[in-house]
Image 1 (cartoon, helix red, strand yellow):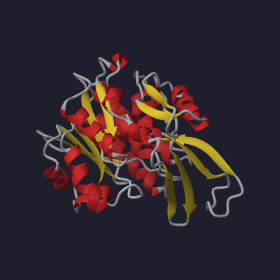
Image 2 (tube, one colour; image 1 turned 30 degrees about the vertical axis):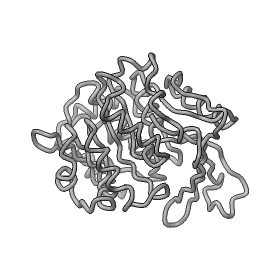
Image 3 (cartoon, one colour; image 1 turned 180 degrees about the vertical axis):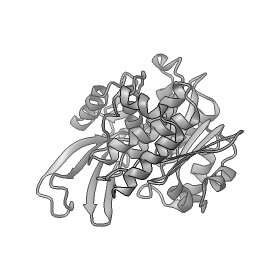
Image 4 (tube, one colour; image 1 turned 45 degrees about the vertical axis):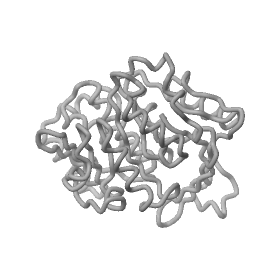
Length: 318
């Protein structure tokens, strides 16, 4: 559940200031996760609101084309679909949002009270929604505390967006929300900015509530920290990075897919890396995951073989 927007980006990959043409796409963290899960063979639905406008129709059509059920999406006649622009530069891509007062900022409890969502095994949320409006923040609290989808485990991706709210304002809210979830995903870099936590154990100490915490450390790897039992670390696959946007969502889809398949934590982390790698290698926010046979072979590798594969890739300059 969360907002998906239309994305405008320079067609030539240059700066937005000097672009003569823009490409039109669709992007949203939560719908990216839904699409990733659908591509991995799961039934996935996306809950949101869009405006009654051409951008809203495009968003719904593209999410549906990825195999996601969009029957829980509301078309709002009184608010627009959100928009963001990508501005590539030598120091990375900056993002400019035009989403204040968007249809998705009006999400509330009604949106999760649809009969078609009953029986869901997993509800995926992110901290982005908390920054959209007071009603959106109340919805997250309700979903986490009153469990609007009975029987569904709740995963929460911290997903701090500095362009939406500064770290000092976001930090206590995101920590409180994350600590109410069953499973939490967070980047070590954002945990450092938000909570001055510089290693996975420090993040875990700040978030004792979730049954499972996953701390992602970019090209280094990811660590799963269950409430009981040892932490599990799996190094990331080497990739020639074109653009990192969307890779965290793909990782979340892979990891959550592993949990839904009852795989062990090491296999879940590997599946997260396997689904994130293709997204890192393209300019868009999503990419198809490896085929099932490739995934099966990679998940079956002994630890030494996985580590050797990672080392070999890094040794080649990737």
